[in-house]
Image: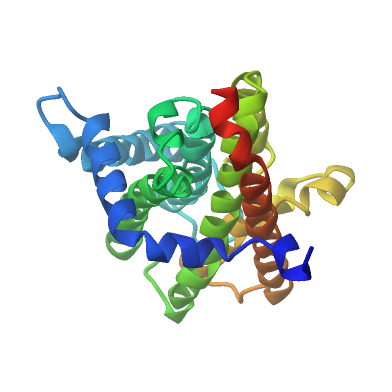
Length: 273
């Protein structure tokens, strides 16, 4: 066996080769999610706006919380910080929720020899990315008109988000493949998602984490991504390149490993289903 056969082909290359099909699947997924509702696709914009308004009211004005980062932090700044963290978490949670059943729920596509199965997990991540962009657009508008404004640090946002997308893609590859053989994974994914929310500093700054717990949480790439995004958009602090490098490194590893798991298990999908 040659050494090249042990290394999976680039997942990004495979996705790019099937980009037209990926676009069609992503568009269909978004449309199906809102089919039957009177407002249809408009809910993709209305729901984040309602959530943002709710967080500003509840966390900003009723609870009067604060991240204690900006000297003149307002309730709106606090609510935007929570909404930004929650937007990144929901981006991950959205794909996590459906990943275990992606392959199981499409047996007809699995048995088609010519169909690139990479499209299924890629479409799930692309759909989640679409909803993330809507939430980020609302956050940017809120920062410009009601927050502290944007600085040149905001240009780091694509560099912060890119590894998060790669990481989620790798995890979705692995989870959807393992879900074919271990159906209980769908139930376990719910617990993992809930744990991830409370361990990713969504509702609080990382500086409030006790040192004993931070020793473990500092390895959570989602937590570091949330903090990096807040630094870039809200807190106007210098980017922590150590954390950014770590997030990129972990994301590349998870992408390659997740696709390797997917490629390794794919030949048995049809037999199990």
